Length: 116
Length: 147
Image (cartoon, rainbow over all chains, first blue to last red; front, side):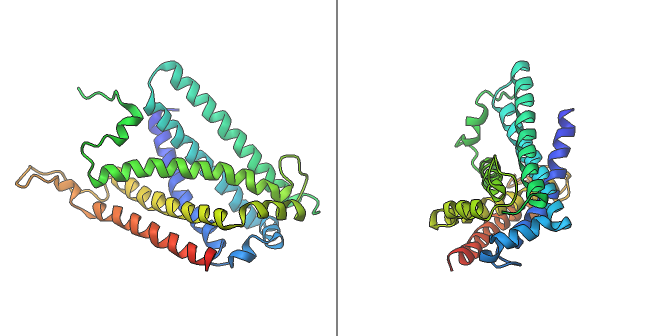
């Protein structure tokens, strides 16, 4: 993808992240009291609610795309070179995908797994 | 032609340290801090389903995890996260508005005292909104976590 497209991606994910993170933070202590928000039953009911669970999954993807693309931009500004650029692009992509996969596993298991 | 030989260390170049420059340094530092927290947070929240080898929601695994994070140090980290996230978010909105030219005036012929006309807009105030907003949000979250 062209760098100008990647920069537009950075702005789109930024705007989405502002809304999603605001909701996420308000759920942790403002709309829901903090002690209740981290309790097992409350967390379980969030994951088992289709809308809340989907929002967490979208937040996961948006924030990791924004964060790792930002790290990529910083690394490419730090050093220049065709090999460096290619290496950074691939490593960042793989690490970001691995983190998305790991987080998605949590969301799926929390929503559908056997409660113990 | 301008060169950029210093790379990342050039961010902290003490020459031209105007408020826009500091806002830029803080945007990157807070971005890296938030990314580090997010990666840790995804690892930490996975203990709701028993960690890397878990198979479903586990109350015992979750209370073990809360035992690690729910203390004075953990809450202090959360307050710091609120501080840097709110700064990064508000300053980031300023950067997007500036990127698309929404909060810039048209460039004009330089006149005494030679301050860039395009910068004398709401965008400079927005940096202070980000700083003050972040401090207020951190104090509010501190009140929730420690109050």
